[in-house]
Image 1 (cartoon, rainbow, N blue to C red):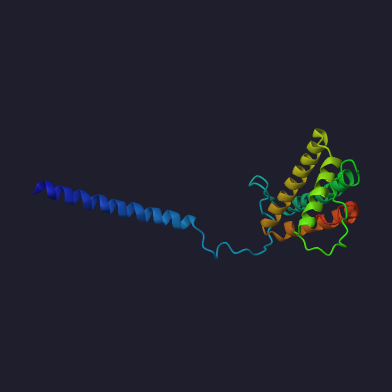
Image 2: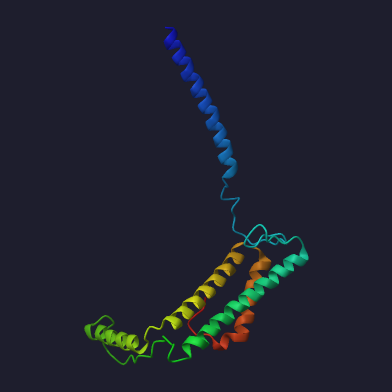
Length: 190
């Protein structure tokens, strides 16, 4: 009887300690969990919004203005690099991968046998007309990585939902397109 009483006592003690530790975990996890109301995606205005890391947190109007100017310049450089890509790779026939205009006088539906054959012929002529050159493809790939990286940095700045950062990115895109938009490709808007 004493053994069963001791077991029952241990079971109750462990159950009560589990309950208290579980309730403690619930309290900790509930304080860490955010409700959907806490995560409302609205624009706000603050001069102390961190950008890219907590180390880059403006401490006042001057440093906030400097951060906004940085974002304007970054967006400007992004648009200039896109235009530079078009100048370097699209304007030089030896480096270009631009598809030649294909007449659409054919009455055949897309996906028909002759359309697929002509697409294969166009692919073969493009492939043989642009041999693989390591130096050219490396330069093209590095430029794309830089353009993509800057684009993602701009996206992260906009995702802070800070009005000043958002308007700075838009202002930089405007300035970059104003300065170098005539050189960029017509179908590349990223």
